[in-house]
Image (tube, rainbow, N blue to C red; front, top):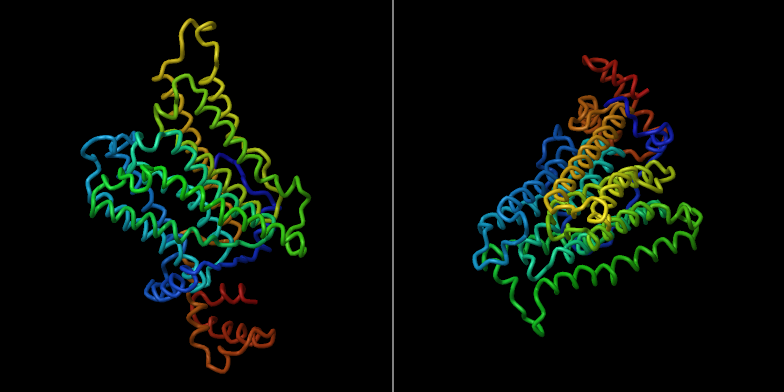
Length: 440
């Protein structure tokens, strides 16, 4: 769109070479969820594109965000005697989270089932997950309210979630392996259970102080941050260290290995400075808008890292969207307004500035995502939300091959024989000539 190309020839060649490599050691996912997802995926029609499953799950998190924001935009609802969010909203949010979690686990299995696995699906999946990383924690903030969980605490909780997500991809950038964090399963189930409990017992239960007069909001913070520091971060550091020790990773020099952290740290430093030195305390003034802005910027940085690690090219050391953010923070935190302009910047003006920047960054990020997806679809000659008809027919023919052919191992001779049989059969249908060329 507009003649902008986001992927270079190096990116596209890297995608051609890319092979997905992951290790999942989580008890819940390995022994419970994966068998469940393998069973569920059998009931999905083969014409259903895996990316459509992924996108549907993401839209459910957006629905949750819109629903709760409609009733409690400023996170003040829990401060009142009667919470403005109806009980049915918490139930819908819990069900949507579970659906999102399960659809996120089934999309890859559907891709392998339909023969459509590829780099686009992984990028699409993780790219949308990076946006959900901002949306999902925001649901929880409405349970506690700004009295028990001040917006500046919300800000750092979101950053903790961002750090957990981002370090997993920094790990893959350096090791070449996606080590799937077991904490993800616990988080999804935990959030769903909390939302269901809110429906049954009411949001007032989250104002209780069961241990040493410590609020539930504080326990929520400590649990999230403490679990990451004790379980996630040390394991990531260990995996990267072992990849260097055993020479199994990318073996990048230290500064190149740390390069993905630079845009992330820039975003953290600038937004933290803004929260503490805003002339109108922007984090208290319009927290939800600020968090949307923060989540969109983070998602753009994360998506660019995912593109780099999948295509095995050097990642960005700086994100261009940081420049308008930096200019905005300079305007909103300028310390000599009264001396220079005769008056302070008004709260309304700073709100308008934040909203304008959020719209600009969102449009820029959506353009980037749409551009990358279209460029990959053009390169691989596929459609994002549709399973190729030729792929479906090929799967059907393979399944109908004689048993002594279809069950042969993956030797070169058996593969050639299978392709030969397929080619002969496909010449008898209207698409045969096209698929024959692809198989030859």
